[in-house]
Length: 120
Image 1 (cartoon, one colour):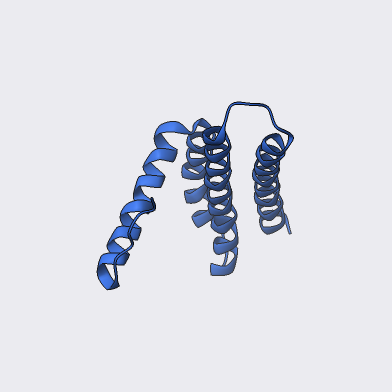
Image 2 (spheres, one colour):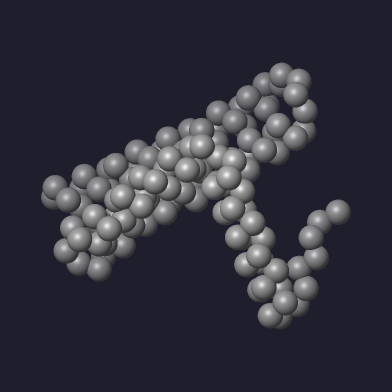
């Protein structure tokens, strides 16, 4: 059975609580998220310092946030696949591989954005 969302402010409060629970779960259980968050905590102040304009700073920070967002989605995919069963199935492997590919592309995007903003 799903979570009840409520209405109005109660819905917003509930949604915020579930979001914080998801972030806490990522921090507690997901090593890749922990590593990427650590990198973001190092790079975010550098982005604020090196970004010459608001747009440059937004691009640098946005690329970092995108990595964290995609990692959380990948972790959610992996959790659902693992929950559905331990048997080896081609679709389970494909789902996990696609999630991993998404994280790889987000990391490549972050590297490309940083290179282009800082060197061009």
